[in-house]
Length: 436
Ligand code: GDP
Ligand code: GDP
Image 1 (cartoon, rainbow, N blue to C red):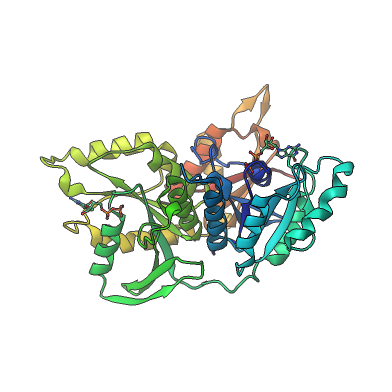
Image 2: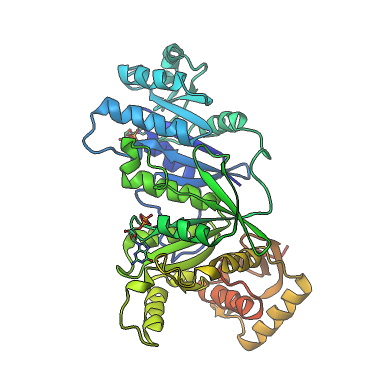
């Protein structure tokens, strides 16, 4: 479940963010109206030869007024802590510098594979100088040109060769969930309150990823693992207080989760940052429950208060129309007993498989109720639908022309599925293919 992760380190200006964007460049967002973390991003998922992995641009985590060398050191430490493989990026322009050597010294001490790359090798003449970089002590340097997109394939091959073998992770039947939200929404309080309610805490064991602690417990015969996010263990490193680092930790926790609890603060309403992480969880296809905490602070509630709040959330998070909303209080423990069962239901919905015969009955009914649109006199034809994956449920529809399946009809089909089957809490992916 934990994604193999590559981190890019190196002194400023060698092209870290250029390479990062190149690696993530091909990524296509499935749903257009989700505000992902595309701008200003330092973390993302990508695919190479059909395999998912995560990429971190440590250069994007800026430590404010810290001196340059100290920033470089901390970025390298983040890479060592978070990544399975480190790409040490240098540049042919300027050759091997003191700052490169500083980075090298930190990476020597790391118990992680390092792949050395030399960027800005834009033409064959520049290639001659790459041998100077052997002096850094990380073997053969991989020449790259971020500007021209050259050399990335060989680099990623080397990175994948160095990733740890698959299947050593914490694969089990536990439902993994995380609590995501801005500082002060009450994540730690909720963690404690949820665990306080649970009779059986199995263990507090170190997760497979670096410093994540997963707390395992059982509720009603169902096993859960709660993934702790940043903020639980504050070790006082400078970078841990930067917002970008916190966001990155949240995104990494989302990638490890089956179900994400998006925590909002009833007192403060919805902020931009709430939408950012929720958008990522949605794009990553995770199960989502919106948890409005501190419900006890809303005084003089009448029977409209909750409805109004809910309408506000639906308006702000339109792409999360499938996510159930629960109003709780970590303080009074109101409704917290319901959470584990809710998480279990969402997880079940995420794993739901529908037989093709049943699906096609639904499809035929849908086509009768709302015929497919015509575009320039040509009608969209849908022949067949089949489910190809779970987590999230993913359906392929075979059509005469995939370009004609527009967002609104796609939306209609997804809604038909939701009306017929219980997919609450899970995104649904729909892919159009032309029939061969
Ligand atoms: P970072 O500080 O390491 O993240 O570096 P950036 O990605 O911001 O790049 C620094 C500068 O180098 C920018 O002006 C880029 O356009 C330029 N750059 C990046 N890759 C290449 C490359 O392959 N060739 C050349 N000539 N310039 C590049
Ligand atoms: P975190 O930063 O998201 O982990 O938030 P904390 O759990 O540290 O909570 C932040 C503050 O909100 C603390 O002072 C908590 O006591 C308070 N708090 C958390 N949950 C509730 C709640 O349900 N009701 C009220 N009234 N206060 C809460």
